[in-house]
Image (tube, rainbow, N blue to C red; front, side, top):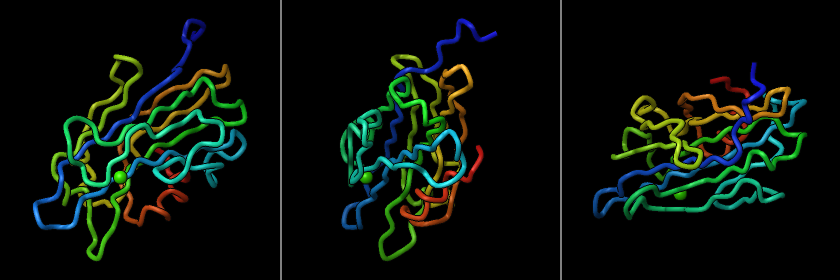
Length: 176
Ligand SMILES: [Ca+2]
């Protein structure tokens, strides 16, 4: 069956977007990863990784961070060294949240969104956030570890309508 399947080792999740029009509040999208224990896959995350929070063992890192979407290429990049995660973890979700200002802002308010999941030069998913234009946050990638210890990627974008903090804590209960 999967005897030759080594599973995923090191993956990258990247998101990009266009800056807001001149004179308007900046668009700030944030990547967030949530790590779940093998015995509580859909409960509260054991830890979160985002611009202000690092993984305790350094296996998941936010390599690039943006508050505006300015510049070429991908604006926020998260690297997940899945093979280095302790055996006690068996699920990692990666989401994107739109920072909220005085007015509610959804993905539909942000131009030029792009999403890429890859391992090395192999693209696992290339998408945008148009499908969740009415949402303020979305799960964009799910990684799970099977009984043999191999990590697998599950593609799919699922929108949420909540602020970034609540999103990070409730995303685990979602199945994509
Ligand atoms: Ca950001």
